[in-house]
Length: 242
Image 1 (tube, helix red, strand yellow):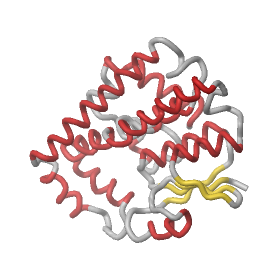
Image 2 (cartoon, rainbow, N blue to C red):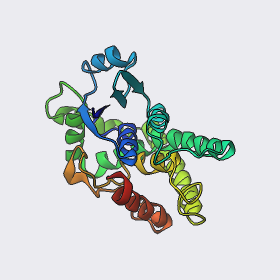
Image 3 (cartoon, rainbow, N blue to C red):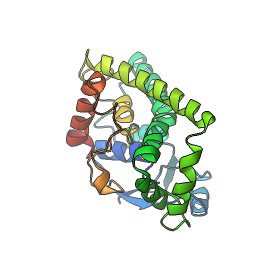
């Protein structure tokens, strides 16, 4: 029986869950959810309201990292974690930092650019993610002025700095080895590829808004400074995650 992945359509953590399933080469199907009252169904299923969540046989697993660990237990090959305890700890510590930085800050960078440069797409984003707001046009118009306020600008500046610092570290790591911690991919690599979802949308069949494939934030995906990282990421999607 196929694993069921419950996701928000444009959530980067949901994409991490999907990428883990793709990497493991297991059968899965996707159930889409929206923010708002529909989240109550997820709470009944998993005891909490965040996604991604997977259902497999009689098990329900929430949280993208927990999903990765569960998949490694149930489907050992290809492995996500090294057997050596020290290397395993290194991978998990790196993955945790990637989760924190890209998970918290990269979407802010993208959303700020989207509001400023592609305001019509804000309505598409809201329509895809939020229940009960129609096309999201009025909500999109309301967001734009808020992003120009000083508190919002400070958040954006911090997000840009943290995102760029993480990209620099990952780019430097890839100058020394094929993958982030050595010569084989790990859980940290899947996180690093999936969580910058919004900095450049990969081309894969379950992308919620297909014509966004390849759309990237200027100064990031097209920057010579981070070229090695984004070229590596595109190849990882083509070969293992699409």
